[in-house]
Image (cartoon, rainbow, N blue to C red; front, side, top):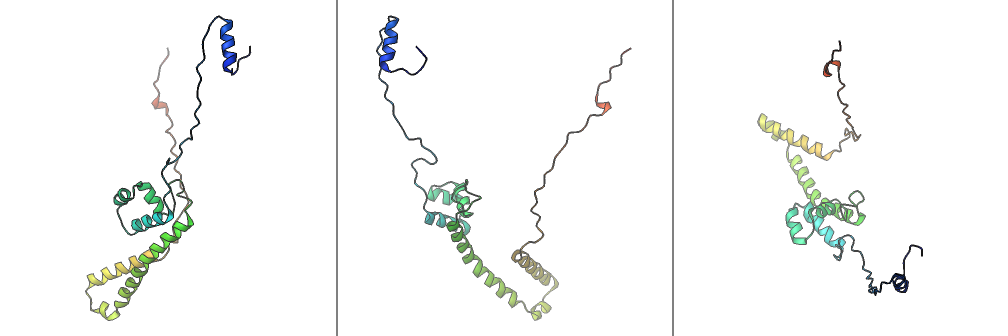
Length: 180
């Protein structure tokens, strides 16, 4: 008989040929769904992700957010960058990303208006009447504001790869054996 899968009747007949009487126990096959990913844990709604991201952007501690919302710190980082998970980090969710941009805009807007008011309050008369250290500090602060507001055009985004070659052995590195 060829090798293969036997029914219970075929298995019993083969065993009886050799004088072995054995009842093959019935095996019950259970089909069970394979648990993938997070298992039965529900997906975090976009509104909750957006809230967690906004709190993180606003300066909330990742430890506190992780504990309060029962999520990992990597998920918090992903939500903050507009992604739904670390696996989709480079492909942000457009809805979450736009919500994060709105949060950033609400923070940046008042800050920019206050920076402009502060800059406009520095008149030539006030600069002329200030001490040299104060004027230098004001100039340094204003240059920092300018550097932070203007985009950096000199950034070189090329990848640099350094390859280190092993040192070549010289004649002095080898043991000299003199043959007479």
